Length: 271
Image (cartoon, rainbow, N blue to C red; front, side):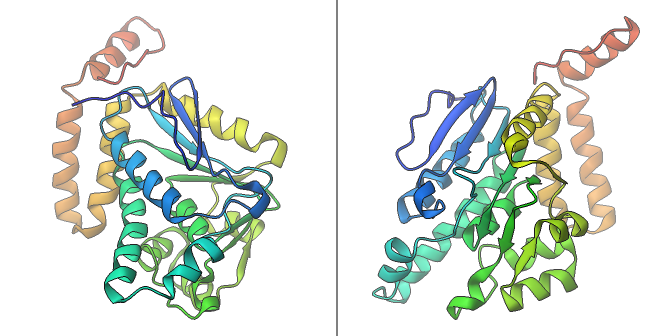
């Protein structure tokens, strides 16, 4: 059931391909790239489709105009939500959560390249990525309590503590304060900080290196990272034994062995 995504022409965000790396940015830099009802839904559907895309091997979710994402658009989302009943509100909150589920379940490594403002739902998108690069000017905040809501939004209370620890996550979620780039790197939210001018190119280079690796194996790694959250150690070890046995049947496993014997660098093809 494979499908082609490289030629995607989305209506509500930017998309381009760098080899087999998809580069996504939000398309409203004049407003620091807020999310809208439409962009939420289209991003959710795109990441769902990536499960079946054999022409996309990795994703960079980048910044645009010096900012990553300012969260849900105040006028296009927050205002209209005030007129919704409980059913309508739950439809929205489930849709936003479905974006995180789609990112976590897409089977492709996602690298967030964060510059400038990264707040609210934008911080969640960065959080839901597998690897995060930031700039010294990155400002990350989980702002939900600032607008009178709980901070348990889109999986934040489950995922953020696993990245930076329970105490640090609790502070950010309760207060809604901004986490500086230096804090983010020190706490493990950012894998590295790079200059703004080099941010996207470094993220794409990193994603390209992953894309040249054993992509079936990467898919399995991402799958197990997700599934093992809810497993005991014994269950996780058994699940990994099964996953690794599956990977040992791939042609990439044999390619790696043949290359080692020939004293060459393996060329993986993702099967």
